[in-house]
Length: 288
Image (cartoon, rainbow, N blue to C red):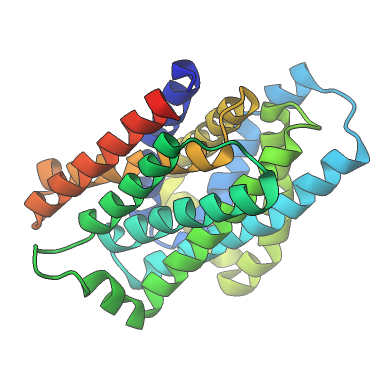
């Protein structure tokens, strides 16, 4: 596996954590997501201005298909954070995608996956499960959490992530990766706007921008920047299953933030899970 592409995805993971920390700290998550996407469109306006190219109809079709799942992801993740903590939602949302992406890659993308790469995916997936364990004997606790609405929304968000990542692997064959990311963002925002207005209203949007303007600007930069790096890696021949799984190293960073900065409990299990994730990332990087 190309180490440059691996580095792009790992940098993306760091940016992704920043996005979710800012989202969780917001007053209203649905409003924050809307502003975050709008700011992303404004901040990255130079992409279409400097890099516009003719887009075939197939490219627009794949972008629109992807935007449906991207809008679903943002709606579901906003709902998840309304009913559950960051330490619950984030591992579930990020941990669901790699397993499904492996299935999509084998069934639809016909991507060549090595045995070392598949083992890396399984190690990362197992590590993500361990990270979410409160203590060594509580192996069923992550599954019990699914009785609550927040974790269920998180799983739905993860399923959407796997879907649009697989779709985008095809889409960037028609449109340059950064331009594809930018235009898909606006399509996602267009789909999300009616839901946001019905869910929170214009008054809710106005209140949110007054309370979290700086955070929403930062999140706008990190959310589009993070996924743009992933698409660049996939355009550089990294299989979608590897790229989508390596992104989940962000869960390790989130766990480290919780243990070292927030002094959250369960540090031993999170460190153990982080070790599995790190080992899986190394296997994908060197043997994938």
